[in-house]
Length: 219
Image 1 (spheres, rainbow, N blue to C red):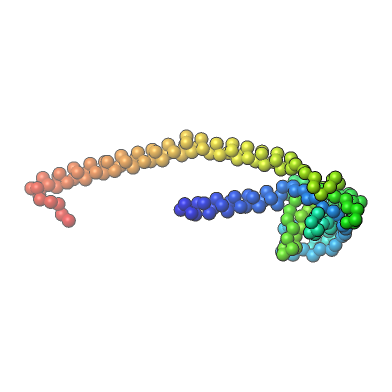
Image 2 (cartoon, rainbow, N blue to C red):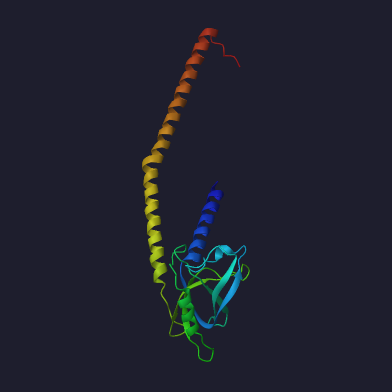
């Protein structure tokens, strides 16, 4: 049971970590090399794509999606999609994909005269699943080595930790005041039942010995 318990808790922790890693904002320092619009046919990976732009028709199996192509300082490529999140999940309330595409196009640069940009995004990039992180903001920075403090993540994770500690304390107090006394009462009750059973067996045994003149009871 101990292994099953820790396996279950490990799976829960992995799911929580994956959910937070996908949903919370991240910032990558990149150089934007191109912006484009592609027609995408959605398949099994449709869960990793956002909804159509707010105000446009939904429920289609394919639509145009904006992309921002970039490279990291070490030369590795990265592609971001640029989709509205609207009023759904995750709650970025992004309604300005067209404006963001214009800002990204204005920041396109060549390697000879690079413009380094912090792209704020959420999601994962997977070539196997053909999914892309969704850009939610771009900001030009001084250089590729600039340090950015993730204040949003620090605040969110701090609040989640506070809530988790509060819930844990509530559960601990509930267990101490309600559940443990119930188990103690049940244990006392079983002990009393066992004592009564043993006393009854003793009385029956004495009664039987009197009837049989001291011979042992039937087997």
